[in-house]
Image: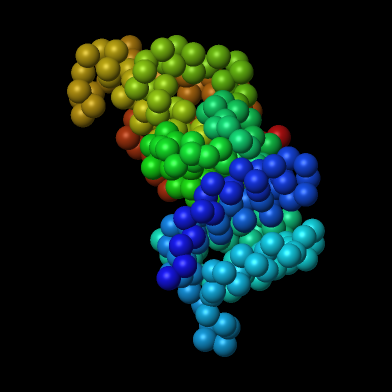
Length: 293
């Protein structure tokens, strides 16, 4: 059996080609993905979706990539990525790569991990970052909570899918992150960001949580309540004091004003902290978010 372990030390060569614009962002990302897949899994790296397609042969694929360039290379990469399953990788990741290669999703390739604040800015502008760690052997080492550069790269692709795959969901997320960015700029969350637990969960919300806007807002409400309960030295299941409840109502009122919500949506937002939040409230808030300028 052929050994493909020498592929990973060659990844910095792909990065050099990308830096000289011999490879587009999407082509570089796709080659990074496929080189890792073949290096990790050898002949088992992929399987065909249709029996009418040839079985994937790693050596043939690598040779095909080597002798292709420009649009021909990108077309070849699209063909291989769309017609095959990849071992250990959920289809969302390869779907994101395909959409990137086709120019359908504006992903932003970066060589470093953006800060949560940077990701918030990107998402408010309708983009998602994808980090490629190409330095060898650095790419073999853990990246944040992921075991290596490839796992972190695939994680970014999965988030890209969650951000872009549904047009309505994407628009809601983009508007939501824009509203959060407005509130951050006005310092509305500053009194809570000194709490380490809240700050970590807030970073997760703005950079690593791609879901429906109502789920995101309910998460925001929950971590605000937890933060104030910690300040009062209470357990998460305990009840807010009247003063704490008034404080959070004031914050939600300020957020509603900052976001220019209509009165009915502003009242629905307040119900995030009183336990009475319902389907009608969710509909009002979602419409207000989507209508935001």
